[in-house]
Image (cartoon, rainbow, N blue to C red; front, side, top):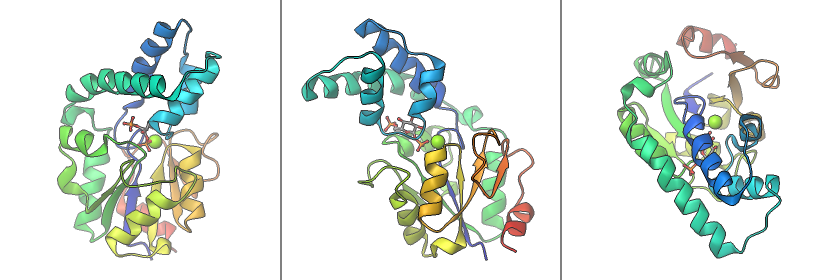
Length: 216
Ligand code: G16
Ligand code: MG
């Protein structure tokens, strides 16, 4: 049966994608090309350096490694200005209540994110106390769809993969959950996230009772 929930961060707990997008767009403009919202879909759940490589591909530019590092650092500094302005109000609807409900029901909670800023963001929105474990971009070597981030989360919680449910907004994240032998719930558009066990538009109507139905 289900003993734990593992949550992706961006797109599930908070909408930081809009901040990433603004920062990447500014960077692209600085390099002399545009970066659209459509392009931005390709960056969901993808690491910072890999995101930069995708953007350079779009702009048909190749740069030496040290310049790439400088650009990635600059992008992150711009992104963090937005993160520092975040408050509790930036937690997506229903998420805090669902996390509290999980813990009240005795379920463990973990974060499984590609972001190196995950702890900072959870601290800004005051959600750190609601997580039993945090695994983020500073802890893993292999990006989603590799299951490493979620397997480390399960390990930290002391549960088996079969006892976990992963909440994800990205296809690569759903695949990571599957590859790790976990059930997964898509958060977002059912046409994009069709491979999830089921899809919710957000947490407003999500309850532990609905979660337990998945376990039967
Ligand atoms: C998030 C975002 C990605 C971002 C990545 C790395 O992943 O979806 O767009 O590139 O984190 O973020 P940072 O630059 O903060 O290390 P997730 O896994 O939380 O959806
Ligand atoms: Mg995500």
